[in-house]
Image (cartoon, rainbow, N blue to C red; front, side, top):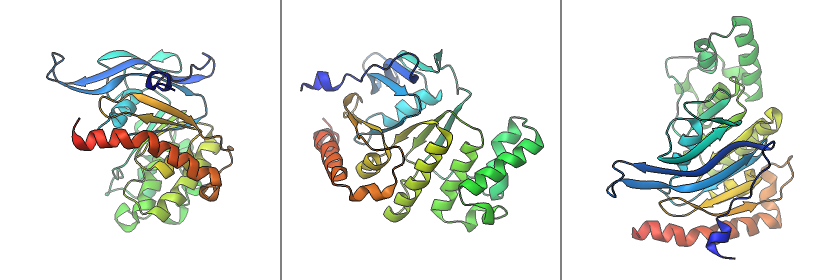
Length: 275
């Protein structure tokens, strides 16, 4: 199959797509040839309720793609939509979790989780209900009065995820949320993320460098080229919805990660060689 054929992302029926990018290009700096062409043109349909991961070499535009979907960056060319409406700012119903620890060190765990709700003017009783649920769901109830400095890195990321969860997003965007964690903790956090995905029925897009993480968590994995990032493959994993980290022992898991690396290896070498 040709590279051009691989780059064609399957078209999703209008009533099934949740977010859509069409011809999205992002250039940083001047457009006269001296700017940095970071992304695109990219087409992508995110199916409602799916778990989609994006892998690619460093600097290929993965985070830029996420920023466009989050309304934190705007395309130089092309269009971005969420639930059929153009993305002109951070859309209501979209939650973002970044790799960096974004917890507020001066606030307790429960106050960190409640922060966005209070800024949005949500009723106090509703805040209490949502925060209590999120703390319980993420296994943080015993640490509600603790401060981030008293928690492990994995637990601080749980706080950040809980803070997103209470806003009840319909699309959850995750930019390397477990990048700083050890392998065992990443697997366990992956289980928590899959449980959150099933419980909320949200659409999830995950940016990751870890091919095993993408293969374990995803319904589909998009592989991006070296900069400027283009989709060169979109892989259906075929996993059941009720999967967890035990799936890494499945024979197909090794086949999936090998396929992803086969597609990604040449692109990673291009990045290393600066070509």
